[in-house]
Image (cartoon, rainbow, N blue to C red; front, side, top):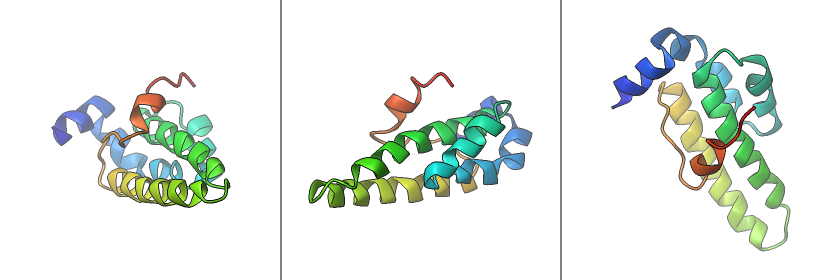
Length: 104
């Protein structure tokens, strides 16, 4: 299955854009691959998920509830970074359904 995902994104695309994809999970830096790598399906996939997580980071400023949101977003960001470094386009739970709807 992972090989199919790599083929759908293009093997060269994955290898050339891993670091761009990682930027997608580092808060506001998700805008860099989102706007700068429009030709890379791999970088766009991870940047869109990162953009949804950025909204979670913003919500995490709410007292009490924010701690739980912060923990969930931090865990999902780490998973996303590991997926990007591994060359995988694995959907993140709670995030992917919204990220797929983004047309940027």
